[in-house]
Image (tube, rainbow, N blue to C red; front, side):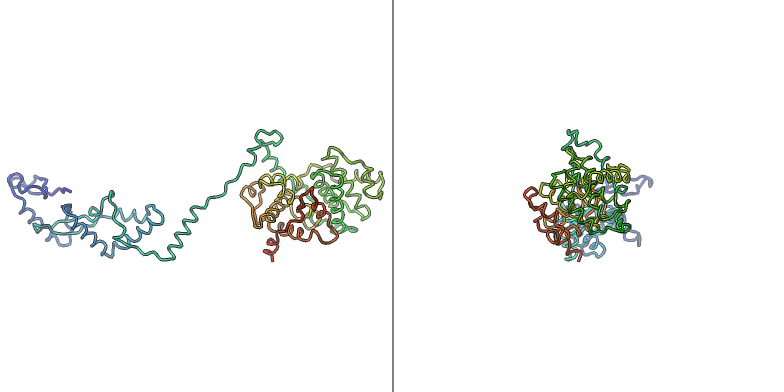
Length: 438
């Protein structure tokens, strides 16, 4: 590399001439050996002032290696080299500290050539060119086991791919019955209205002649009646909702409690079914405990008490949507309905809104089938419930499943223990959900 040096001319001291120290012995009729000697003397006499890097040594590789060895032995440069090597091994990205080091002024190392002249070699320029990177064995870095573990943890975190949310409505884009255009708005409305159409979770406190046990017997009996008439699932879900909402607002004596259940199912059939059972069939089912007049009077009382509000979001509308999000098969579907119907009998489950009851049933069914906790981001997105929010309800459902075949109220277990429902009630319950609570 050539350097510009200011020299004085004999005739005119203001004239400057460029001089190449690696040039020939003569230029302009004068020799430059004495000039080199003079410059070396001047540089030595400057005292604390560092000489200008006037010459770069590019003549031999041995001098470069000596400079590199001096740098490695320098305690100031060694930590920077070690830090840079560690950062390259972990991130492969330039760090701010390295960029600040690059902005610092270059240091020079003094030496002499064969003529005895003082020359200055730039440390930065003496490094190996980019085309031939410096071998890593020149500076061996020792990595502690803790640093290796941290680097492995960072690499594992980088390769974790977040689970995508599946578009569950894309397959029904051309199905007008699926209402893909406004299905999200529809379920947002259901979530908003469900809190206004739920029974009070403690309404039994205002009932003086009936209790939780009587309600459980009524619901268990209605599930058998529903199965005998081969009615739709929507009818059963709406019947239970009408019973609890009516009893939340109207006190009832125990001898008319069965009539309340029959009339609730009659109204649900009129709302949901195509073929509605006649009043005479309901009277026969009750073993003629009530007359036609009793049925019609109770029907009028129930409709007026509920203000003819029959369009309510039951757990059925939510379980259908969430099963689609879970990409369910027939086994998961049957097990989910089995768990929901078990929950209908239990009075304590009224504290859960219909949407949470449906989501918890699917989550519990997944845990029962697969044997481990499973709740995808797609299910969480469409249900609006995280796994932690479902655990309490799921543990209760697992307990109901475990005791479904015992006791006197076994109507749900016997219903789902048939070939029509795939003997789903014989499935082994998810006991690990109950054990985690303990």
